[in-house]
Image 1 (spheres, rainbow, N blue to C red):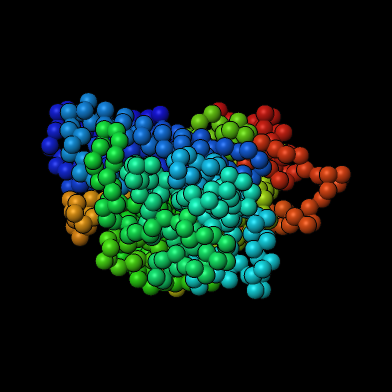
Image 2: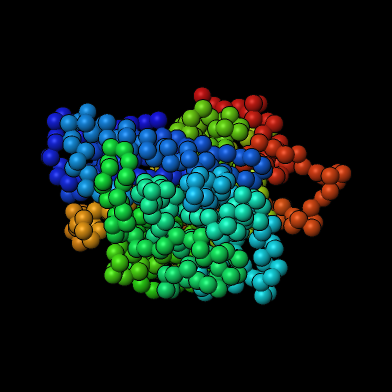
Length: 561
């Protein structure tokens, strides 16, 4: 757990009205307090949250643990405020931003989860996707894009909910009896914070709803045809609301009675927090995964190059709906965690940078971390992690650098797709997220993408976006979104020649090709006596022999000090 304070000394009232922001992510939960007038972070508290791997390719979290982490973060942050002699009563509103697509189901009679949350990068629904595609005209992943903007893949909530209904008897029983509630993490938190069994609100916002495959991207309502297609009863779905309005009031803890007035999925919150509020602006967030969002204004742009069409934000009931193109990468910071936890290559995630800097390049090593398939622009569930180019001279430092380059190459692929869809070449890439403290990563990104990279000096842009939405809501109105001060940035410019950039990118594309087609469809899976049967490995797992070889070599890799 971590706590931090920015303000010093007795400052009660000095900062004016305050806004709190819950930032519930895949790896941690935080609660931050911002001064509405300046956007300054006054204090925060952070708690790590566990990810569970019950089977190969499965990723779960305990919904009660997620809720507890939020309550703890609020409590500890309020204690920090009191230590700073800031009155917690100055908090006038709270916003929520959350990991998207992660699916929670619970019983409305007991308030208890009926299963662990199925996390967004969980790949268990690959077989469900196969079955759905068999019934789809042309077996096209894009069959539903015109309705929901999304391809049929393991990523989105509808497939996860369908799997739970088909495979968890408690979920099916609750559904049959009319007692099942479904929600993404924002909905689960809102329901509990606003009363749970005692009048808790079952609502979500348009950004989170747009990630389920069940909302019509045009009218922003649950679509009967989509629900019928996935066999999801509409009675289990939350009410869809805008991203900025008073939903309800906190009914427990030190912020009792404070309104919750902003909800945004984490990537959309970062879009707002980076102040990408004009069509043509874009940001890239580097966290567990990597997510690039490009503001397309009120225009719905259906991608022809593997990107997603999503709601960017709707800041008020009567406000216009702003859309975005999104490129989603499943594994970014998670690759660093894999090197730390599975290979013991580093002790702490921050150690990746000094290790990578001990070599001038990756030594020809390319690492495609497709642990649960490839997201944009490929959408290949049959891909698995691959390490190419190993020689006797390869070291742990080369692998560390290749892991950082993998994040940058995947972003380059998305930028190329975005340019093809929009016809616009970005002249600057605005970045945020936990990985952006790594200067080596950002320099590699500028080199590989061929565009300058701008990192804001105030890095909490995801939580800031949620706070802005909450503070600007009708009835709160303590944050004026028409008078925003641009964030100051640290800039990284390309330092390699175009020829070198394209040579390295071409090699990356070769490595990507080699990772595809590894995981066979169920009917083609080798039986238990097949001579090539793979052993189950530690999660998130390895499906290819080259990576398994690296695992065995890990303790023998030379790591320069």
